[in-house]
Image (cartoon, rainbow, N blue to C red; front, side, top):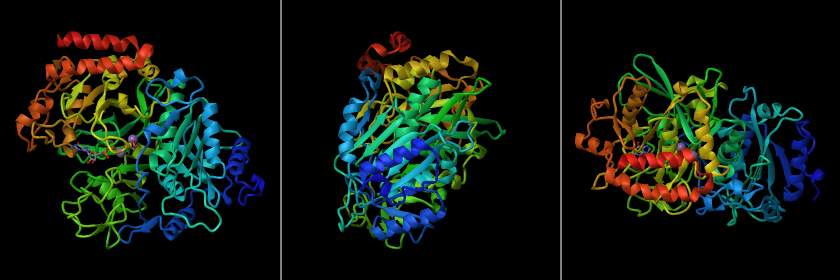
Length: 604
Ligand code: GDP
Ligand code: PGA
Ligand code: MN
Ligand code: MN
């Protein structure tokens, strides 16, 4: 079949010649049965969700309006970091933390995978915009996919369809995003509920601002506006243009006196971003509102402050552990409906459930593996990386600014991870450069958000290890330069937090969740110069008295332990930091070497 004869290819709803040429070229290569240009309408959502219900991919939930349960292929449940490539023209530009292949070689390999890969399927063209449509420079993309699940997920996670396509005009720049599940159908061949291929490639071509993804339907691998565009490609744009594309939530904190601060926080996947973004503060009179839970694009405003915008339109949150006790605002968002649940359990009466959803489990469930499940079952009912996908606009605490193209001025940046030991509950950096050192040496136990072993401590700089689209050393230098070129009095203060420190018996020392408001309060009090801290070798730490602990039902000994900076533990950390820096090689900024030497010196 040659491209021009594919139904739906012409006439197209755009006069953008490069977009048209690319769509024709991909159709000729992948040979779909038809091409559909997505308009983003409610009718399109209805048509595609009906089709997916019919196909057995989705189950419509009786107990939540316009919401759907989905179970993936059991092998396609998370991001695949070992199959993710940064194909820069020069290998040196991808650096030591990324997989690299020559872009020409990669295109040869992937072209053969794409050849005929959409046979028997529909090819969808999704014009989309990351960040508000009303931005001066709307950040456009187009995703071609053969997955209806991807289309409906993009309905939630991005601004897409006709409104985005209108911004393409005749020749706007856009990021080309090609996705195929890699499961062509022969004539008459029955489909499976979750088509995918054993072979997977998640490939970024940074110089061409292009993404090719093959073989997976999972969110982070397949919704290409998210990690691939808004972090890997955008981090390269940000380096070139002098801004920051980061793995950060954005929240608005209002004090009882009505004073507003915006905070951005970077934690590795499944380490608490979504929960912190939607915090229901334990402190009376304090209010948290949400702007974003995963990605922040930050640029300096004319006033010299750093402004953050969330490029996304929805939340793609970890389900397990999300409940009325831990994250009521997520539960309220989901209660509105219009959501997709992937790899959680399905109840008898057409609702969803997962570990931590409520204190007691239902007596009977269909597990994410589509098997019978009872409380006696040994395996969890839901995959640990099961997800909900839901619109920001229906979050009861969505901040009014969440869709503002100007973004919000950031007062504080938090870095954090999961560390059972060593890293205190909160520590404030001495200055920007020291804060960059904290971010660059961030460490965390691995989670189920990526395939591979869980619970292994690794360095995850700025929580961006899987997402930096270029050389990590250059990325650190970019962070250093960001501070050097700025008015230091207007820069956000940088903090390092750890909600996950454990006692000798393995319990968490800090209750976390809504109680994290106490840490937010200390941070903004520091920003305003009101709270005390005492100086330790690793930064400023609140004494137990500087933290607002009223009404907190936790042994004070636990809090002391959570805040403790143990010099021996930190001395043991030094060789690990040295090893990590050694892997960065020549491009490690001298500023970070200096910070390491200074830390050593302070530790004696
Ligand atoms: P994200 O992937 O970074 O957005 O992380 P989430 O907010 O989805 O949280 C991931 C997991 O960590 C969930 O199981 C949460 O229940 C858990 N979690 C989040 N915040 C806290 C906290 O403050 N303390 C503890 N102990 N667990 C938390
Ligand atoms: P998370 O987002 O950071 O909320 O887990 C998805 C991911 O990073 O894979
Ligand atoms: Mn993430
Ligand atoms: Mn999240």
